[in-house]
Image (tube, rainbow, N blue to C red; front, side, top):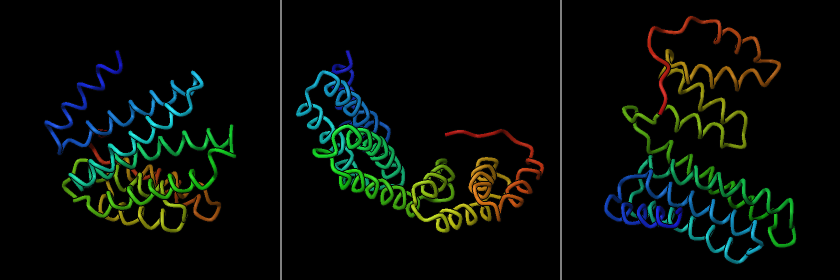
Length: 193
């Protein structure tokens, strides 16, 4: 079952330490198992699995501190943040808001570090920057990240859509968002990671 698959991925993770997807998948699987333990009303087991998930990503970052690894860690931190938001809603005495805030801060720092380390030739460059923009709490900082990215990649549909979406959220920049969307897309395919 899922635990056997997890064991296989753990072994692959040791064999291929530079692969950011492997620790991410293992950590995400542990978070899912944590949710299942919680559904069975085994809170201690659930918390242990969640802590193991986060430790896997911390170890992966120590071993391979690349943009891709920080991006993968941030995705896991984002999933953990979502778990903690729900847990805080259900039991704020045990799962205090500080835990949610710490998870959010960790996610933001990891996306920022991924952005800092990303190189323009990295296939995930655009996605790392868009995710970093979405993760910051400061609307002006998010806009700055997206505008800089738009300057670097003016014909990238993902970048244009991300900036337009961000600008559309404010009345004073809504027209600019529409202008960005009205520009003809360059010939090419819509790329994905």
